[in-house]
Amino acid sequence: MNFSGLTASAPAFGRAGNVRSPNEYALWEILHGDRHDYGLGVVAYEDLEELRILSQHANGWIWTGRGREHTPQLVTFAQWHALFAEASRAASQAHSEQRDWTDLELPGETNEN
Image (cartoon, rainbow, N blue to C red; front, side, top):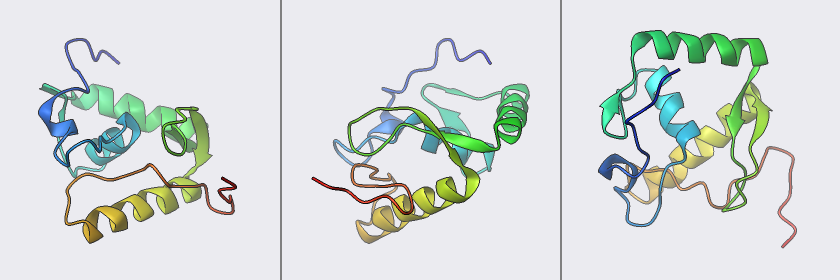
């Protein structure tokens, strides 16, 4: 994939104040047709197809972890769907287009802070 010239600091990534959507959410939305822009550009069909194939071969999706931990990990599609749904519910309750991932946990995981 060639994402040169694209940046996550574009306005589309900051619609809800300081809450920013990590790349995994944006790429998932692009892959499933919910949006087409990524940073300052549009992701090419060939790149989306490669991303789809790679995620199918991995049998999961990348998740950067809870809060600001930024610990990239492969999660199953079932775990990812639960994470994405929770982020979408939080965004809906906040009347925001952006998802807030700061307190999300993997299904079955408990936050022991």
